[in-house]
Length: 312
Image (cartoon, rainbow, N blue to C red; front, side, top):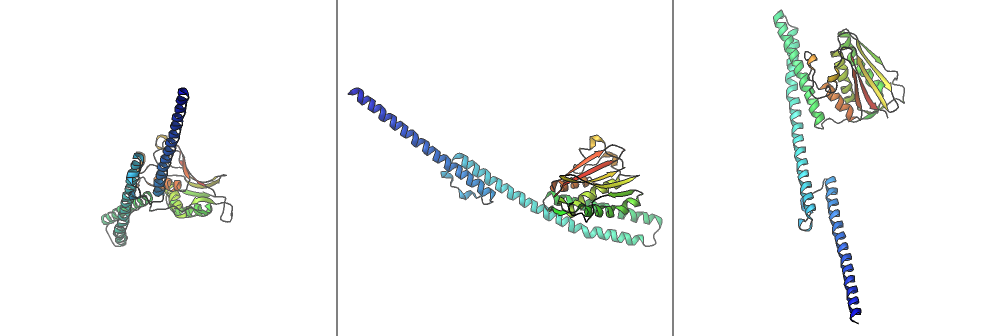
């Protein structure tokens, strides 16, 4: 009888232990599920930009949830501060552009008027130097404003389905007189005309792609003293390639990885005007269109820049 009672007691104890364990597991699972739900709600509120610290009662949260809530709040404050600073930069850029545009335009205008008057040779040289420096200043400010607008998100690339013929023809017409004035030839090799409806480029923002391609062609003209520039179009299955090749001075192999860096200028071309952001802007614009730029060059034997844009 005593043995039977002992066995019964052991069985009851075992049942109590099992039931207690099951209850403990269920309570733990409930607590964990609640915790994960709270974490998930926090992240959802962050993604929806509706996260507020007062949404959560810290007395009911785990230590992990409290830390995450504080971290997310700090991140939100940081994002708001960055947005505020970006707006200040935008306002500053706008002010620079507005405040300098009129004075520089006036300097250039009065310089041209002075050139038309009867000045002696020494005075004419001074006027030409003044207008030349004003043009450099105008180019510098315009370039820096474009760069700042691109980096602060003020410039938005909006790709549209467009024909490559229009782009290359516009660039050719723009730089043909500049190249010929320097004694260089410029050729356009684009076998796909405006009537071929199946030849389009995706990621083609007309204004900013013209800016990017123009920067590369402008460099080709600037650093070529004899021969010329060829703009050619090649069609691949996934990409369209606009290649700008020249017979210019070329780029040393050790510098080719650096020329797309902001403000980088080789010592070998320091005598030429420029501030070293043309290629940087070109790369940023093309990459924003999901494309890329490839360079092939040998020092003293010219360069070839291939601009690859995904086809539609």
